[in-house]
Length: 283
Ligand SMILES: Cc1cc2nc3c(=O)[nH]c(=O)nc-3n(C[C@H](O)[C@H](O)[C@H](O)COP(=O)(O)OP(=O)(O)OC[C@H]3O[C@@H](n4cnc5c(N)ncnc54)[C@H](O)[C@@H]3O)c2cc1C
Image 1 (tube, helix red, strand yellow):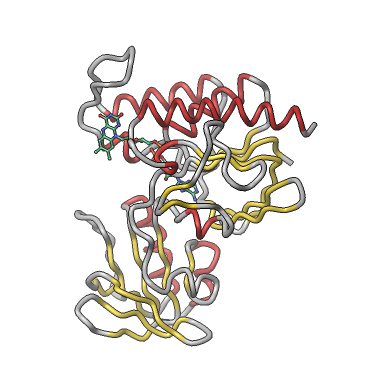
Image 2: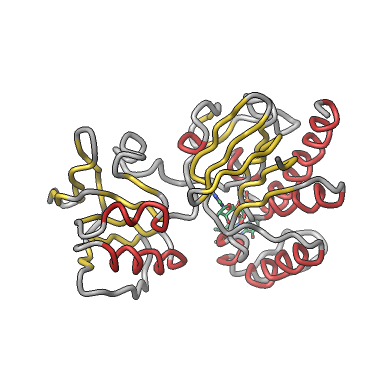
């Protein structure tokens, strides 16, 4: 059982991970070792104290370097479900179960609420994990929503299993190809009965499919943790970064505006100190 599970390798997650590591807590830290795609995309950052004018690419590189200096290695897995249990949390990431005494959500803000029907059919044809669930659809027709180039190898993996793949990518310059991949327009809805039966496209076309894989950088907080209190897309926290669930904290863009690096880093630090207090009170 870990002391803390941190979800997200952006500036908020890194800030908390550094402090908790310095206090010698056992940490499981989920997210991409490339850190934050948002930071990476920033052309110039001018308001981060002490570093002057810096490109997002360079700042993100320094974040990676700083994590490595403190021997912090993220687990490159997407957490898809969290279950609060008696005094701890169980987390599911790529079909592996992890347990922690406390939880820190630093998942960034998820701009969309997902595809209509996605939450309803999760586990009944909708999946967030190609390597976990792909084999279930061997020889079948499936749909894939791919939100980042980072997941193209998972699209290729699914195309190797399925008979046919209807693929929608939400970004430009996608170069994933296979004979059985058919590009489609935006997916407006996923439909079915007990299980997924079809996807409805924005142009009104309905395609019969057995599954929809949603491959994104983030999962909406309400999908991740059913009882978490939200205000719109944001997680409600107090000044200690506590959520409504005991032992669960949140920091960074996921708690609300302004979406800024220094806010994310500051909140990550506050959350880390609140977690240290919680752990000593519940030792
Ligand atoms: C183009 C652009 C320019 C910007 N310029 C500036 C600027 O000049 N100054 C400034 O202060 N701010 C700027 N920002 C905003 C800044 O980048 C964000 O405020 C900051 O990155 C938020 O940090 P975060 O840690 O909260 O979330 P993020 O940086 O979004 O990181 C969240 C991380 O969590 C991961 N994650 C999410 N869900 C899961 C899951 N279920 N399992 C595993 N990992 C998960 C994501 O993949 C991501 O890596 C800019 C943003 C953009 C997009």
